[in-house]
Length: 375
Image (tube, rainbow, N blue to C red):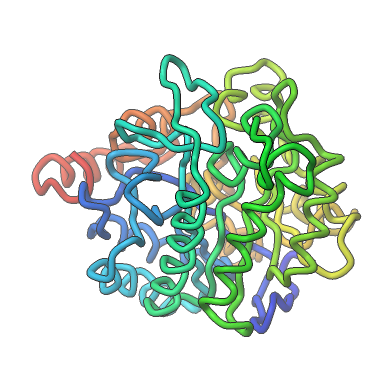
């Protein structure tokens, strides 16, 4: 099944292998595309994966998650984004770009959020109705830039505890107006975003959704509500749901850490979402190390598509090795290692501990000598 085609919206994926968004800190400080980012996505597309989803791009200056985040909030960024779409297409893969607003996790002096729930020592500002309308419009405008840049589709980031999740979660949404309280009201903002994005790009342009199935936090967003939300997204005609679990504040919890280390652990949460849907394809990712595991997920109906993020970063030849085109063994992502995350989360471009030493050294030398991408 892994190498069988699948229709997603009006597109046909050549196989069931996708690359979900993976933040690596490769953008330039102004949010534009760097040469190392172009080279990275060229390599990922050359892997043989059918769909490459480019890492989250900010829709507004108020929602940037890091100082070196890719952006899609200005027209002058379109040529750089188009370059990425082109290099992915040159390698016979489809290209989507994810768009995002970080909300209470933003790297800004003043953070906006559905409610003033603290992040560490920082108290975000509750969004007004005007703020809500402006962010919805920002998503729509960013999506149109994605389309104008030549991508085959756009993905709305509704996971990892970012702004759309913050409205969904009763832990972070304490509003008592039309955007808070019952699940129907907490769903209103993310559904408005999806509707505005689809209206901006046109009914035939695929809009995927990065979906949170479980927040892993007390009083948070859980699977039962996630299933109901998934059905609402399906009625809006999303092209797929890319299922994730956990918010930033859950990432250090023992149960989440253990889930992350377990092969294909997140697929346990993708399954219930898939069973709640009638027709929308589901992507699952999360340490799917072997082709055998990927095949089992598909065969057992836990998902329709396999996402390889850090797995593909560790070994860009994984799909070709799985297909038998290359005879050497797959280089696994080390479950005890978080080098890529440690670097990207501290403002340094990600590298992989599994890369050969010569490759790591050459990459770091390039960053040092040219200043390409992040410092």
